[in-house]
Amino acid sequence: MDEFLLVFRRDFQSRENQPSPEQLQEHFQKWYAWYEKMAGEDRIVLRRKWDGEGLVVDRQKTVLNGPYAEIKESIGGMVIIKAADYLEAAEIAKEVPILEFGGTVEIRKAL
Amino acid sequence: MEEKELLPHLFRTEYRKLVAVLCYLFGIEHVEIAEDIASDTFLAAAETWAIKGVPENPVAWLYTVAKNRTKNHLKRNSIFEQKVASEIRYSSDMEEEIDIDMSARNITDSQLAMIFAVCDPLIPADSQVALALNLLCGFGVQEIADAFLVHKEVVYKRIQRAKEKLKEGNIRIEQPSVTEISGRLETVLTTLYLLFSEGYYSISQNTILRKELCAEAMRLNFLLVENELTDRPEASALLALMCFHSSRFEARTNANGEIVLYEDQDESLWNQELIDRGAYYLGRASAGEKLSRYHLEAAIAYWHTHKEDSPEKWLHILDLYDHLLAIEYSPIAALNRVYALAKVNGKEAAIQQALHLNLTNNHFYYSLLGNLYTGVDRAQAILNYESAIQLAHSQADRAILFRNIRRLQEL
Image (tube, rainbow over all chains, first blue to last red; front, side, top):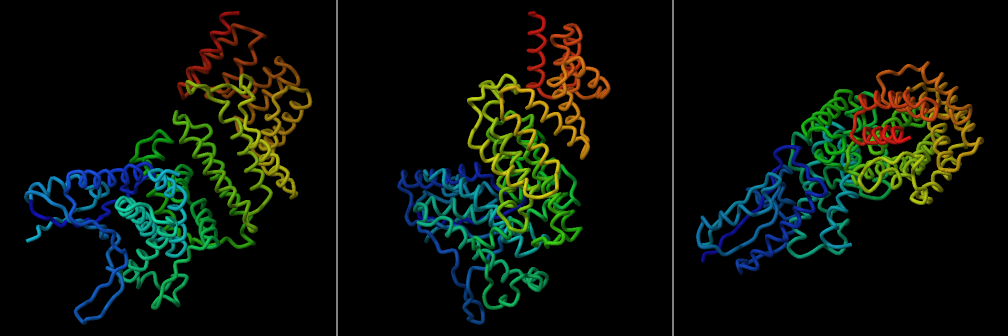
């Protein structure tokens, strides 16, 4: 088993993706279920809540407030999980609810 | 409230507030950005709260995240900044700190300003109701489609068209001035009336959704009544009308979802609290001198909350319909007047008046004639009910008409 970093990004493709309250409830349940499943399979290495604000240091070493993400692709959370290989990690990533509203999951293996 | 129900509940109550405050801040040109920020805030909540539970003060959490998202967006997007920053209400503070004011006062002001923008007469009626549900009530495209029994794409297009109209017309999201309030309030009330009617008379079988539409229309109307500027007698009158109608919501459909006619309703199912509220607002409405159509319709609805038939009741109703038709003619009101006339002067007199209306493309016309001929001329009654079935739109309407014919045949 290797460790993989999963980074969640939301990405609004179209205004039609606006959730309804019912969809939002389902969405929340799916997140909940996904974390439960990961915990049940003992895959979670690190899960944390991340502050939405953050800082960015640029080339001129200026410290700026916030990650300045475009709303269209704002960074959600990230989690480190255990998986056999990239293929399995990708299979796991396919189940991540962020994909529902046009999000993406970036996967990196820890070396 | 259970944790899993909390988020949709908050979405219902808070999404529209975020959208209103942000639109008020950005202007109508950037309504999509406001919607994106609000949507994103809730998706972030779904994701974050699933990890370690709901924060202690979830509403404050949502507001903070929305504020941060907005600040980030404003700083990030240079085009947006150049174009909008100069127009933004709090432009002086722009460089240091953008203040996104989520105080109760500003939320109310923003929502009121949004109501006036969305209800601008520039937008065609069907688009207007869709846009109102979407922007003022936070209804998703799919929900609106379910309520109107149309395809999702149709609703989406209507909303887009409405937004384009607002942008083309350069409609400002602002508090209406005291001088223009009368004229503009009228178009707002028309939209709320439409919204309520969509819920109350909708052919959709989804009762929960229909009740929500009515509740939303009443909530928006309540905002008008609560605000000093818009608290006009006609706003109270419309709210009274909605209260009286809503009081019969439980009684007007049976367990199978079929419509129960007024005469057959179980009045113990009428909601007395709503009737009392209606009476209260009708009292408030009588403050002014102007008699609007809402005053008359509310007064008619008031008399209908008395189940007992009395000569007095129907005389009042007939008189009110006469007034209403003088102010604003509509075929439905004319048909209803004839019904009241039958109660006062008898069915034969009413039949003569009904035939004069000659509304041969309206199924209510034939079902009224069917009703009037019942007990007078059975063959004519059946014939008219049959014509009504031909023209009826919904299964529920047809079911009632078939039932009436069966009753007549059993005589």
